[in-house]
Length: 539
Image (cartoon, rainbow, N blue to C red; front, side):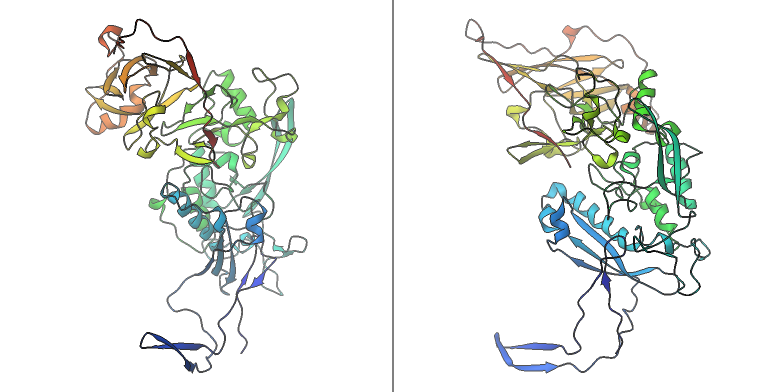
């Protein structure tokens, strides 16, 4: 019989190996009286050539093997298609391998694992450089011309993948790409299929955007097979997971533009990265965006310019759903010219700026606000997303009285370092900047709950002076009120209410003001400085 085997290939469609097949003769072992009787076996009759699997659109072979590719780097999983149907070239079989050494079994990491599984399935279903040449329009006609002799798109002999036309991927040149010290010419690869173009233009609010940019780093298996990390950061089809992955309308549009599927966009998730930031964000370098926002005296989010170091200064994510850090760090080597984003940096010697960039290389080393995890001696303690109750610090290190949970958001701290005082010691914490707290919207005002007290915000920028005693320690610090509309606008609107206008806050003596009462004549003078040594960026 002439059976067609299914081959597993890498993402470019080569370096293939044949998947194992069931033998023509299958033996079964019978069990009798709970004992194994190996003397009795049955030999299956020879089978006719398989005609496929009934009522099945796609077969995915899944393995969990620590392969050489797993050992080469921080690869979590990889996948590809391995069989296409003959009429419309749609993939009908694929293979995904998950690297056991990189998979987490912690409950908090379950969303990440599920996102990884979906990510690899989409590669096998069509989001792959090896399939771009086979995409079809809504009438079922090929977007890339086919060879008369084979019926396939032309083959790139060097890369051993089928070529695609500029109706699928187009090279777009930016003649003035701003970098440190000037400009350079840079060529980008963009998906330009109709639905993708429509979605990215609406997402970024940029009517001249040519398409959705593809990743140009990472080598085989990453480049051209994922969205560009700089442009789509936490979209699940970028080349590396960093925080809160989402499958957006843009990825749904990509799958529909293959010509093989119909997408239910109601099942997509909102992508907030770059939303409505315009052509200035979507079509220029992150250096140009940082420069422009600095001149306008506006927040450069989602990019940032604060060097990560001691003292550790955290910030709030743009939607206040997490405590974040700017991942701007010093690299040992000078960064490639196209990834140098700073002419000057505070407290950095002149000429050394070329070493500084974001910690995520696939994002073109652009520094951005990133969620992180707190660790101690490589042991994970907690994360920084406000909605997870388990991220609340333990009592003995909860200096700013944070409270994580389903109705918590991130609020900025004042510039003053938080202090803890007992009758024997004073602690000044060397990391601060933001924290997660419960809040409520009531009577036209935003109310922030710190410790066992509720503080009312009367105007944006108001500093709530906190003086609360818990477990024998007096906690002193400040929490900054954001605009009421930012936190409560939607909730009030749903109740036909509104945020009241700003007015003068009550005098400080009307706010909670716990007093530390000590029997000893004075507090010991020793000052304990606690440094934030328990943190690392989440990759």
